[in-house]
Length: 265
Image (cartoon, rainbow, N blue to C red):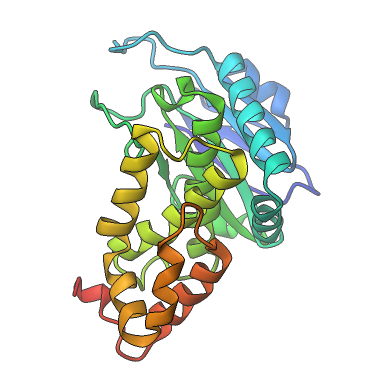
């Protein structure tokens, strides 16, 4: 098992590989023990080695190439989307962001064309993280399937996982809202990424993404808008909804006195 002790990027970062009994204050020594670790645009990118005795259902992307794909996708997102760049900078003011390529994730074979189970926000991935940084750890695990996706699609998933779920974690809202609503908010970040990246909104995959977002994850949020601000329902009747406006409405929704999301109403 890997234990990582975190510190701010402005100071030395200590990595401990408990499985090997190795403790070192340098990224080079960590790499010598099976962990590739680089910094890109202020984000920690890591690639873990697969278990030596594990068997996989797909050919794995090796660690250095996985890091390159994460760099390319993240760079594309930040270059194309001032919204995403501002959201990332806001998170970096509050903590350290980690994108961790784990070829062992998910543990079971799966097919998920929308990527919901191909990456995972893991706030408790690192032991003792909150004790060893003056901010918070914002870790996202990227699995063996997602790392192979086209750059634009990978970038949009990173927006959802890092910016969406990361904002909830940084604001302390992950435990106070229903899973359905958490996915709604994170999905709005993904939608904004697709807009800014110029995704083909008429493709079958994008149509399914929008249907899932509106009619499944954001169903409660839409009901709230319909009751409280019906004129704002027009926001949903656009190919490219005004995401900053919807996120502002979402903040009103989850802070409302009659918020029922935690009960699944």
